[in-house]
Image (cartoon, rainbow, N blue to C red; front, side, top):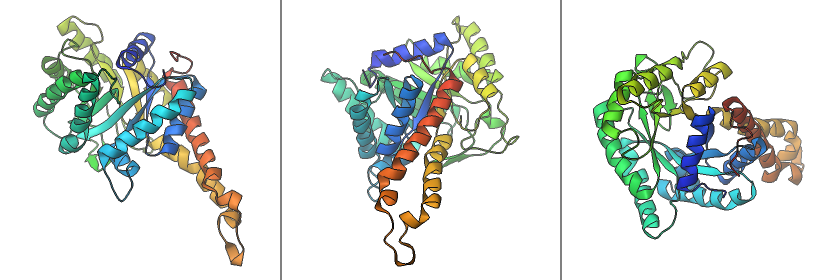
Length: 340
């Protein structure tokens, strides 16, 4: 079962929460990064999540076309085919859809998936994220409630963000300040609006100082203890232990101790993009520098076809990214936990 069904995806989340581990959620932009991500999960013997951002979807459709729905479905189709041979279960997810992109991206995907469900098929994706962090919380939750209902019809899980992640991703930028820390009051408002599972399952990105990208030590002040506080206070109010299935955004560059504490406090999914981008690109740079007289036709020479063949450096890029995903699986404790 290479691509998770809705039931298997729910089982993945349940197993992670009960076992105190989390899945790396790796951003993909091309067939090569899809292959690299799945290869990394297979090497770690971990199930995992691959996810598409709006920019990644536009790029995948053709950099001159920029059709985000087409690119998203193309990446999903490629992943569905190649994942059959790797022996791990992969969930497909769309990442960070802000309000202005809902009508041109996630809502059309949910509509397509609702039609699939009506035909007795499984939805293409297992979850979609609505990022309402750039609008007031009340408005965020009103839209999230509507999307949760649509997600139920599509048999998908909704991911939301309560709080703000700093830094920049796909043109969405936020300052590094006190808004990066979600409060227990925010958590209670979320449960009041979306329920605690009875209206449909959802994942929640509660922020605890998270920032997209990688910064020098000291620039980012992560406080994973906030997650435990919110789980405890909201859980006490509604009579449910650890009510939230949590997501760790801006995970690249975090320390092992910060990751461990976040997972202990209920994180079952950690987004990783910046680190895997670098891990993909770094071996390519080394190849080009080392084989400069092969990849270039220097001083009238003809170069070396074996050096500039995209497969030569492409394999190195995929191996580098896969190795970084293995490291993430080990840090998140998902290594060796595959269902299949």
